[in-house]
Length: 216
Length: 216
DNA sequence: AACTACTTGTGCATTTGTGCACAAACCTAT
DNA sequence: ATAGGTTTGTGCACAAATGCACAAGTAGTT
Image (tube, rainbow over all chains, first blue to last red; front, side, top):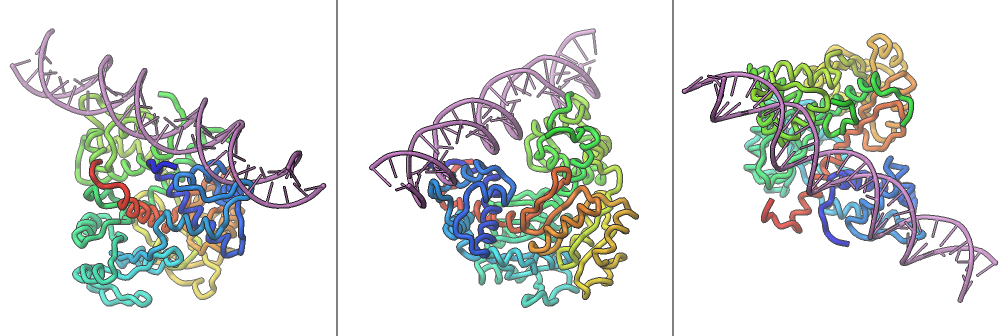
């Protein structure tokens, strides 16, 4: 097995497999085949095997994969065996929802700081954290060794927030603002664009007028 | 120009171009080149032209694209010239944030119904709407001719909500629950998985130990 | 009216990703 | 031991997406 370039789509799928394996493990399932994983997450069995093959040989021929083991390996591939503290900038409705999102905790993420420059929001309690002014960012980032920040501010403020995050030493940014950000090459940036996802739906729904749903 | 299969990645980018053009238009920019669009959203100029070429010839050689026109065409491609009413199921923090998200309104989406089966949430006001019990769904969907629903409930309830949406005639679903849903072929389903996006970041950050940041 | 500077649209080559099909390996039963 | 039924891992072929490079077309200038 050579270490070659891994497609991003493969990483996305491994993350999904990982979560599915977590479910199986909780149900007490011991062994699983690529066919079962494939059916569970909606891809082809060959795809499952190919994706895993980028990282090693985790299964046993004629048997399948041990759920606990594979769960562990996928976590390791994704670097989830260490905890990942996060900071969220923007304490509006979206920032609030992300800060309290249970799905993050299950996967090893924990929000350790929430920032906003709106004076009416600073000091507001969000579960056991309170909203801090941006000036507190260096302190909290250093204290918890934070590497990843989440941007949940309006588009107009997003670039400024990204710059501030980078200045404070963050190396990964998850951006929810609907705008394209400029960041240096060494920063990992991902955009989650809520409207874009809806627009892919509206495009596909529109296409139906043309592509008759006969076959395929 | 033949109508052939359009890559989903192309649609994603056209949605991003569309939003960028909206920005330019608001700034009063009249003409834009594929190079400028490319720089603005972080792709290659050839990619911009190829993407648009799937749908027609919108530019003028030697000149570029008229911003207002291209904005209009991209909106039309994405089917955004008609309004899209939405329903949101799940009035937790995420459902609340999505129901009040400004980014949707800018693009022609409007939430016309919010549902939850938690009695403590029913009746709660969210801006000018109030949380309704799921039984009200048929009425609201019919009244506003809703086609798209957003799932913002915990993973354990998501499949049930999807089934209910489909039974009520929705044809597009945007799922925020971290679980793979089973839906019939004629339903358009998109998953927005918040943890998966973070995990792609953690994977990439982990890779840096191996891939020395020399070139590229 | 010819020349220069631009920019689009696209044929072609390249790169990247997916799926098939089968050998290799494993387990159980006889 | 051997045979039969499974399931993985992977070589190879195919499909899809991207990038290059240039002809075709436009606007302005001399």
